[in-house]
Length: 381
Ligand code: ADP
Image (cartoon, rainbow, N blue to C red; front, side, top):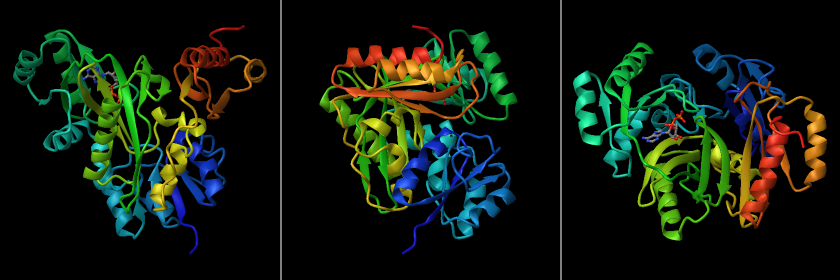
C-alpha cells in the first residue's frame, strides 16, 4: 500500500507545523497557498499557488491528492462537495465543517443535541433584540455568524443604541446576527480530540487558555485546579460533538467555565492554538494525530509527558534582532522550546510560540513568559 498524498488548503502556520509530523510518518504533503512566502509554503516543497475560494484552482490541486485537509475553515462547503464528487476524501467533510464555519448553525445543532451552550438567539429586528435583552439582560454579546476570528466579529455590548448599530454593521457585511448571553466565565478552557473515519477517538488533557484582546496568549495543560469530574465532562462534550458531527481529524471545543457550569463557546475542526503545547508536551502532537486521523491510521497517545506544560504565544511586537534575542533565551533556559512561523512581524500577529514542561507551574510560567517577552521585545534583560 502506498502512502496517501495529502493536500492542505491554506498556507498558514498550522499547515507549516503539519510538515515535521508528515516527514516523520513518511507522508507526502502538498499545500495550496496564497503566496510563496506563506508560512507553510516556505517549508513544503510541493506548494501550489492558488486561492481557497477559486473552484478551478481547488479542483486542479485536489486532482493530485488522495486526501484534502485544512489550515483554516474558509473554503465554501459547496466547493468541497465538488471535490468529494471527484473521488477525493475531504477530511473533515463539508457536512461537519459547516458547523465550524457558521456559529448560528453550530448553536442550532448543539442545542438540539442537548450540548450545554450559552443562551442564544438569531436576531433580525430591533424587536428581536429587545426580547433577547429582556431575557438575558445587559451586557450581551453580538457575533457575526460567519467570518469572525481572533475576536474580530464579536462585540460585548451594554446598550440598545450600540447594539442596533452593530446589528446594522453585521447585516451590511453580508452575514447573520447571533446574540448570546454574556457568560460570566472565570476562565476559558479547550478540549481537543482526534477522530478517525473509523470512529477511533482520543482526548487530550483539558487546557486553560487565556486571551489578550481576543487573541489566545497563554495555554496551560492540564488546566490548573480543574477537578476530575469537570475535566471528564469537558472531554465528554468534545467526544460527543466529534461523534455527532462526524468530524475527522482534530476537533477543538472552546469552553467557558463559570465555576458551576461548563458551556461551549465555539468549535475548530483542525489543529488549534490551544493544542500547540502538545508539540513538546504530549506523546503525540496534535499535528501528528491530525495526520494520523485523516489518513485513517491508528491514533497516537495524547498522554502528557510532564505534570504541566505551558505555551505562550509570541505576538509580534518590536522584535529587533531576533537571532541575538534567541541566543539570550537559549542560554538563559536550555529547557525552552521555541517555534517560529516564518511570518513578518506585525503588532498582535501570532509569529510563533514557546513551550516549556515541568512540574512547578509558577516557575514554568515565569520562565516561559520571560522568554516570550524577551523574544517579542517587551523586555530587554
Ligand atoms: P472568535 O471566532 O473570534 O475566536 P469567539 O466566539 O471565540 O470568537 O469569541 C472571542 C472571545 O470573546 C472569547 O474568547 C471570549 O473571551 C469572548 N466571548 C465570546 N462569546 C462570549 C459570551 N457569550 N460571553 C462572554 N464572552 C464571550
